[in-house]
Image (cartoon, one colour):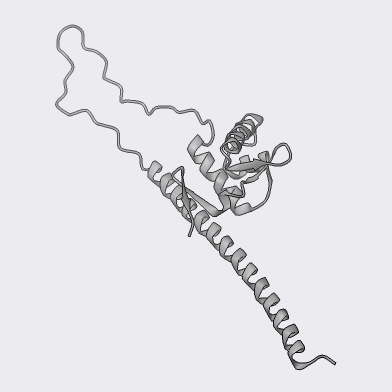
Length: 173
């Protein structure tokens, strides 16, 4: 028959084990919360950047007093300046990198290049997917993402505990 103290020792060991499990679970929940906070801040900054880009300044107007030179034949009326045409080439480099890091951090798992490309707003064309692959390979060389199987990428383990703000690492507390 077990003595009273042996039974107390056993019960203490069980409770200590439960406390350790709860501490581990709490640490994992805190880490997840920190990742979500980083994701929210990054998404908010991306949305702010996009809305700021939408506000284009008005085109300069010519003054009403401007007159063409009088010497020689009168030239045709001046044409208003055209808006510059910029070919749609997909997501810009900085924006793509930011979106990739946010996506992979929030996913917490490996993702295919094609799925990453579509999720960050690229067209599903081979050219845009290869551009995304190139960007992911570059991020892998920098240690920000890792490539498991060919074409499958995930956030690097060290990036999960470090937020990236404007291209600089910001340690979490």
